[in-house]
Image (cartoon, rainbow, N blue to C red; front, side, top):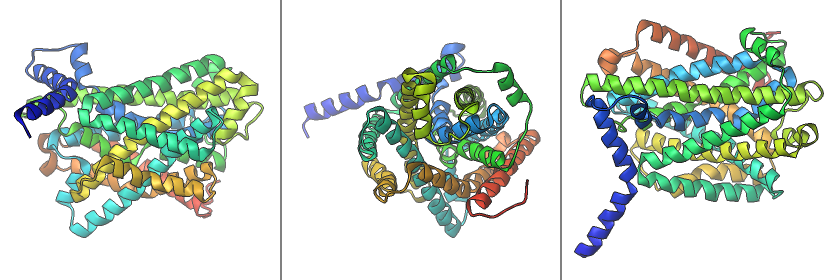
Length: 442
């Protein structure tokens, strides 16, 4: 290669990484105490925004529509509970990456025996594929309905769009954060429009948040589904990887600064995700509960929205679903890549990773399996896989040998244990329901 060619190649990499380098330079200014305020906070924003996409993916659409249509505002408190648990675990995942410089999968590989690591990797890979199945199908369903095309064509378009977005990952972390942030903003804007159109009883909504109740066994199943669709295995893995090398903190004092900004971002980003989930339930309650409580599928909800609230409401619903499916599918692929690299030290091209994770979705559709049924099945698989990252994260962040002075405080440890117990108990209920086991709860 000539010197001129080398120079051109260097210029291209310089251009591609410029925004990321600017952010890193700004973070160094913050750590040195020369930059403070809102601009400093924006420099550290990004990882939680990407992770938050997992909390508003198509699986959430399915469970939130069922909750709102079937029980009105009664299950809004479940969304709040799930969001609080999610905030806690995402904050712990981010802390692990910031303090140790390792992501959760890498820590598992370093600290656990080889056979355990292999089993964890297999379970986590299956979870990553199940996640992508739900997200990929969600985007494809939205495209198929919006443009009146066959589902398989919608899947093809989704595959092309998600792959194109993933190419920006080579330009550093900042471009991807901006793209995903734009999708989150679009989803949020869509639901502001939906709330303006739908007839909402805000008093009843407040009662649903403040007055916990489970009217019957079906409500319990939906509540478990809401939590199962909210706390996601791949998001727990991913967040630690997004923070592990993003800000170069060399001392404990600098790590505390990074951690403070990270915790603030986690609260803001996931609170926004929680509000969007609440808006989904509220919209479904206002539109369907009084006259059509049987609505339980994404396609049915879309077709019912047009006569009830008008074509604009139905179109906005599909736009938000497409944005959710595409962005969460991108994030799911990033998570799968990180899981493989962390557990096995294997790196495969992103196009191959994208191909591997979307093959199950095409196979499901080609086999004639109902898309909504496939979404439900994916949530069952995620429920089986969720204990793996949750328990590992609790072990590491509660270990002084791993975390040093950043080990979980007794209050955080107790809260995390309680949150894990709630999620894992409810996941057990979900699995029992899935396999037809009557637990006699009602």
